[in-house]
Length: 201
Image 1 (tube, rainbow, N blue to C red):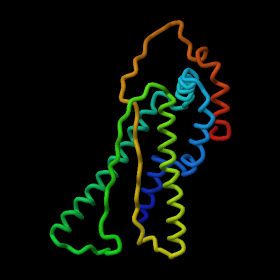
Image 2: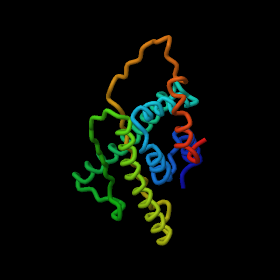
Image 3: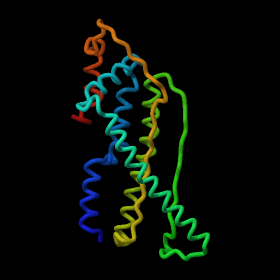
Image 4: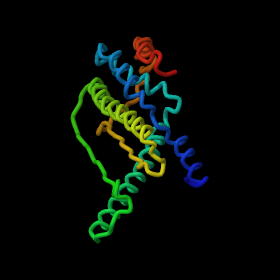
């Protein structure tokens, strides 16, 4: 049983760094991809602008992203510190207390690629959502196994996986008195609404 402080800290963490529901990888992202698969590159470019302009916290979204990365960086350090302690303990010949699950591990996966269309990033999103959709299925399988075997909470080992990626490029902007976002994207507004229909407010 965790302390009251630990429980309150967990609730605070979940509020500040909410987790995505599993359905986003199994349902929402594949649905969005299916609806956008027939759009042209120009239409996808306009949809990117509309999505950004439609965010209520436009101008400070990077702060939220930076906080999330800092949070996961702390988790990374915790995992690696635990791995280091396990490695040193085994090197000294110490016996693990939990012989059923003696020590932790870590995973580092990375890949770089070049893209030149917004559609390429949608393709990446589809592949990664398929990966997490498979993890979500495995999660349900493991949960059912735990329920069947009546596993106590104290016996469970927390595991986390996340992927982070983005464009390694400096995007240039310029002042243009004749430029109007609304005018430029007005023909794509209805298509964006149809793509996200039933998915988000």
